[in-house]
Image (cartoon, rainbow, N blue to C red; front, side, top):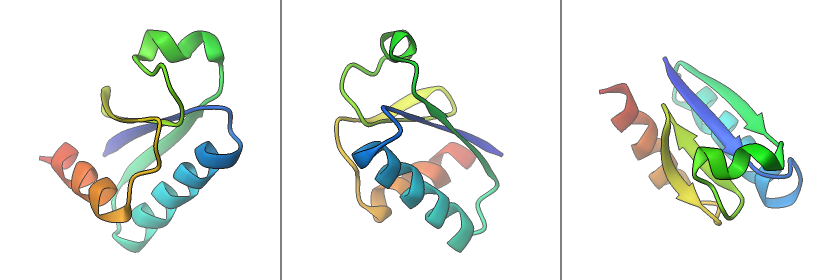
Length: 81
């Protein structure tokens, strides 16, 4: 199982990234837990200084952008190795 954290406000681009991750997980039968971090105090601690951010298994994979599905899926599969 992989652990995905979406870091941001919970609105706008953050919400878009979360929904995209959930869609990819469902469509590709990826076993994952998705959590949204909206506490601004946690952002820097997690290494995300610009939102939205995406962390997979403790590794920051994206900051300040909503990546495309191909990249997200590649990061998910890489995390499963």
